[in-house]
Image (tube, rainbow, N blue to C red; front, side):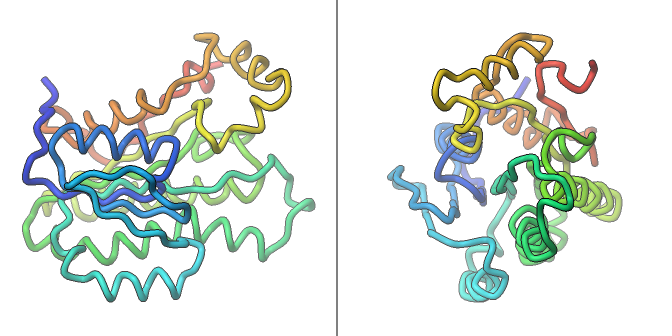
Length: 245
């Protein structure tokens, strides 16, 4: 049985202004948690247990300065949901460049690493902590994104697995989620016009539909609950069967 009571728990969520991050934020607030939420866009939700910052994770120095300024808060984090990410337009290597790839790596990987390194020492000291990284089916296969996105998500999965191995004995519970077609603003282009692309994606998905962000948030809730304590270093795919084809 999944524990829905997160009172007394402090959750850090990145990418909380929309999509999966927004659904996670609302889910954990409803479960009683104190939530620290970050996004490059304004977070419009207001709640007495919600504390928000508008922050560009693509700015390495700006993020590090924020980390240094918020050390007292970061030392209280019980659950870290690294959800922020940017999607490319399925461009192959020669249609991009090193600078763009580096930007994808900063937002999708290095920002998660920066924040992890900031909160991990206190988790290790307490011998308790939950971390869930938002990977993608593009972190498992080719074709789920372009070269920059696929590279970044594979790197994030590798970071997660090694971290989970190294810190399992310290009581740090670490996993990742790999969504497929989720109906979020990140995928709005697929629904543009007559929505032909979205319909094609749904038709190509074995369960014949897109998922809602709340479905990913519910999976996250399971992964940070006592019900999943024996699960460590795993990538949970939620793609309607896309990757089994």
